[in-house]
Length: 278
Ligand code: NAP
Image: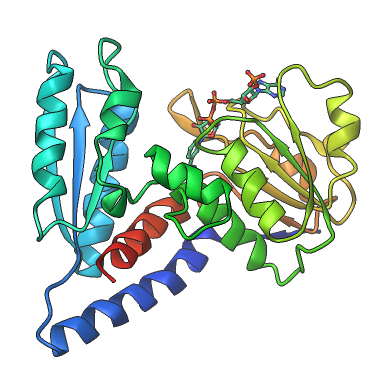
């Protein structure tokens, strides 16, 4: 039987480091990190994520402020708020909740964030640096995924990794991070032929498609690490892309949903705020 990768337990290790960093700053008379989360409109997922950011930041001792703007807000009003935060020396990190309302051009708004405060790596500058292998903020969910894979103790270098999903926020950055760790990486998507067969060759399988229980044991190589990024609400319950009970006997390690990747994301964001202050 495979082992469960406990996202909450792994996140706790990073939380302890963050608390230590903040306590040291307080001891030295320095200010604590400050993050501002900006939400436009009423997206339920964004609200849930924002509340979670507040809880985690408060527990860790990070100063947290939220700004909520209504659905009808114009692009220039959002940019104006971001511009003020950009020059506020007491703000270290700006987190813009996505999606934005449909009438707003997401690219224009994300581009207005000061790249040194861009803790979820949304700006072109951070994205460019990230894919060129230069020092940049690493997007939080992908950062957490790599840490979970590393937590198994298995060396990523040289392994066959398959990522299902090619979005800018998960699939592509996970591909890049696995490549940085010297894995041989294949990225699959909705047009991939023989998907099951490709996945079954993976030592490390990451699924980020948003299709509940799509990945069963036929997709999994014996002894593989399986990372489930998917989160879909079905009948009020959060479901992953992976049929956990079906794959657990075949895989060596599997992340549960909930309690896996999602548990790491906000902690990685908190880590990035501390990096921004440093
Ligand atoms: P997305 O932008 O909708 O992208 C989904 C990707 O999956 C696309 O590349 C799509 O292919 C591919 N895909 C869809 N159906 C497929 C199929 N049947 N076979 C193969 N590939 C298929 O989604 P996302 O933003 O990356 O998010 C993916 C999932 O992760 C969602 O459930 C989301 O809620 C979850 N998520 C969780 C966290 C967390 O912290 N836990 C964070 C972010 C996202 P095409 O490109 O060909 O369309």
